[in-house]
Image 1 (cartoon, protein in one colour):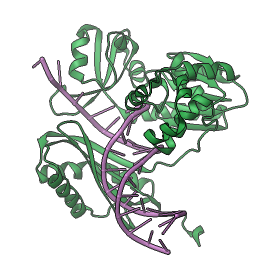
Image 2 (image 1 turned 120 degrees about the horizontal axis):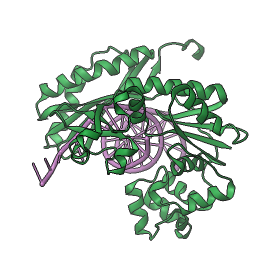
Image 3 (image 1 turned 180 degrees about the vertical axis):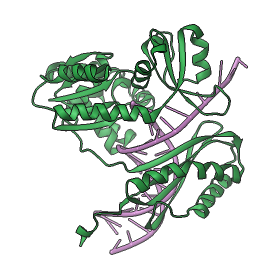
Image 4 (image 1 turned 60 degrees about the vertical axis):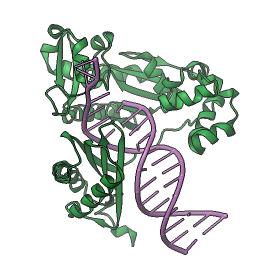
Length: 347
DNA sequence: AATGATACTCGGC
DNA sequence: TTACGGCCGAGTATCATT
C-alpha cells in the first residue's frame, strides 16, 4: 500500500499563512528576473487566482492583467523559507512512517501496511503547521500520486486494485506523471487519447518511437505491469544556479561576470556537502527561449574552490561560435560528485 | 561486442 | 502589442575503452 502526500498550492499557501494581508486575496508567487520591474514568471498561485486563469509558468505581466489589484498580491518566491517548511513537514511524516521518500519540495511517497494513517497525516500537518495537503492511497506509487492529483485540494482518496486500474486507464494522457505535452502529442499520432487505449498499440512501435525505457513503460500502463515499488532515496547528483542577464548579449565579459556571481552559491553547496566535482556545464537560454548546454569533465575530482575560469571561457566561446543567437539567461551546473570523507573503506 | 563515460536535450515542478 | 524562472533528474546518442 502506497501513500502520496502532496501539499496544496505549496508556495502560495505558505505565503498566505505568513502574511495576514493575504487573507481572501489572490496570491501570486513570482520569480522576478530583475530585467524590468515586472519581468519574470509565476511560480505558483492560490486557487482564487487559478479561478481567473492565472497559472504557474505564466509571465508576471500577463498575470497582472488578469488580477484585480485591490484583490491580489504579488510576492517574490522565497525558496529558502519554503525549504524550511518542507523540512518540518518531512520531520512530521517521518515520525509516523518508516519507509518515506521525499520526491520534491512538496511531495512525499510512503510505503505502509494499510491506509489507516492517511487521514492522520493531514490532521497533524494541519494542526502543527496550519497547512493543508492532499493524500492519495493506492496499491502502487503511481496510483497514489494520481489519486492525490485527482483529490486536491485538501483531499483524501483511497483506491483499491480495481479503482486504481480504472483511474489510470480512463485518465487523459497528460494527467499521467511522466507524460507531458510532447509524449501526449506523439501518442495521438497513434490514435491514442486515453491511457487505456495504449493496449491497442504494438509495444514494438512504442519502443521504436519513445525508446526502450519510455516505450516499455508506456506499454506497462496498459497492461498494469508498471512499477509497484517505492524507489530509493537518492543523494542530490547535481547543483546548478541560473540567472537572467540584464539584457540579451553575446559579450564574454557580461556572461563571465554573471557566471562568477552564480557559481559562488553553487560552490558553497559543494563545500557544505563535503564533495568534489568532476563535471561542470554552462547552460544558455537564448532569446528564442531555447535551452542549450556545453559541458566538460575533469579526469580527477576537483575541490569546491578549484579555478575553472579558463574552462568556462572556452565553453562559452565554443557556444558562441556554433550559435548566432543572443543569450538571455545563463546558468552553471556542477555534477559527478565524489565524497571527500569516508573513502577509507575503499581500501 | 560489450561496457562505461560523456555531452546534450527534455520536461516536471 | 508583447509579455517568460530556476531548478533538478531521466533519458539517449555517441564516443572511448576493453
